[in-house]
Amino acid sequence: MQFTDAKLLPDASSCSLDSERTLYPYVTGTSVVAFKYRDGILMAADMGGSYGSTLRYKTVERIKPIGQHSLLGASGEISDFQEILRYLDELILYDNMWDDGNSLGPKEVHNYLTRVMYNRRNKFNPLWNSLVLGGVKNGQKYLGMVSMIGVNFEDNHVATGFGNHLARPILRDEWNENLSFEDGVKLLEKCMRVLLYRDRSAVNKLQIAKITEEGATIFPPYSLKTFWGFEAYKNPTIGAEGSW
Amino acid sequence: MSKAVVDLPPKGGFSFDLCRRNDMLAKKGVNPPSFRKTGTTIVGLIFQDGVILGADTRATEGPIVCDKNCEKIHYMAPNIYCCGAGTAADTEAVTDMVSSQLQLHRYHTGRESRVVTALTLLKRHLFSYQGHVQAALVLGGVDVTGPHLHTIYPHGSTDTLPYATMGSGSLAAMAVFESKYKEGLTRDEGIQLVAEAICSGIFNDLGSGSNVDICVITKGHKDYLRNHLLPNPRTYISEKGYPFPKKIEVLLTKITPLKEKVEIIEAGDAMEE
Image (tube, rainbow over all chains, first blue to last red; front, side, top):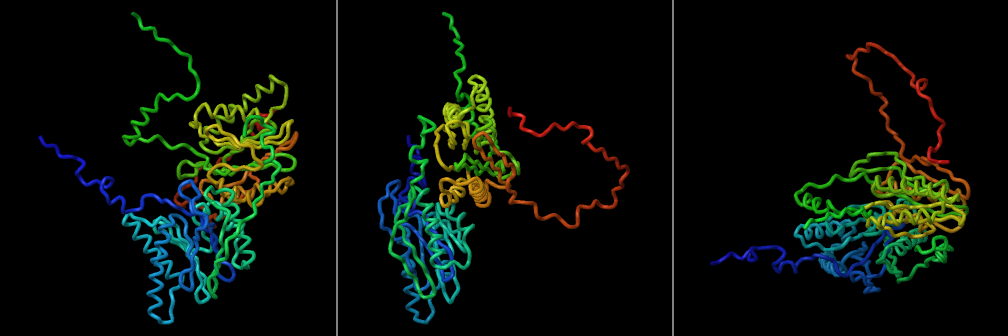
């Protein structure tokens, strides 16, 4: 007697097509924080690439300049970020080949990224990233975000991942349109310090990048000072013996 | 041979009897009703002379705000107060229960209650229920040993901290604390910082909203500032008013002022001695 083997029926989880789509992220970057300031956009991200709960890579540059007018910062799967950089490379290359004096601005790059992310998500094979795209073209500042499911929007200050919960409340209170560069960096450092204290995948090695009409500058990495000297931390359970 | 049915005394703790039935029902699509949660931002901090506790006042039932102005800072003892986040029934019941136990303990010992007593009673209770009593608490008070601030998680673990936040708005509030807290704050600075942290939760978290409640506890004295800040006033009121259509005839108008009929007892916390 022959029984039809139920396992021969097409079943998404058992066929090999599973290996051809992203199911989980492996090497991930944590939050990116960015906002508009007087002369352009300021963006900051730390340099950590976590492999699950291990801090595997500590020199991952998660902010890259795109063309002449934009900066791209990414959190999430690092390999997908590198793939996106290749796509954008090709895009900028073709744009340069036209040699028509026009160059793709941040709005155009943002739109391109939105289309890419959304189409990948529709094929159930997403690029597992949250992207922050900032730039200045013809005096117009632009700052936008695209998530892995294709949600995109434009705002004066954006953050990805934990930055949404920890940094955006601070930015909503303390951001204003006419921040100077020094004030902007101070505000960014404030946000990154809170993230360093309260995000488990944060590393104390961050890079700040700015983009203005003149061009993009990514500053060399440095670390933030942290404060652990509270009296209460020295002997926390002095009043409650046995607890912690 | 007769089977003797041994009647064991109830051992306390959670009874898992109905879990299989609930699982079976859930598989069939019958889900239990959602609880009234207090979404919430609750915070506490230690300042120069004592402890300041703060809370928002929104209670949610799923996506609906069921109480716009509830009280989340619960009385435990004259010198100890406790903020509660999580399931409203759980926080109320557990703080009420421990408050009564503390009262009995005060009668027994003849001394002022200590914060660690409340802490231990709460954590023992919550641990024995293995996290099913979903109460996340910020407990603060001043006793003979000084000011204390503790956080208690639903599974029964506790932390002793100089500043603490709990609830869905805890990250927004913690962002404010981490950037602005320093030791030795004065009373006004402390109140200002707590109010700022709660406002951060109110405006950045959807589970928190409405008003800010604050409680300042110092040695021998406490200040319960109910609705210290009202940052969400009802601003739009229709100018046209709400007139009835003219067809409705008023047959009789009789106004009975109720104040004369009811004896008003002097306002005061009925629980306090």
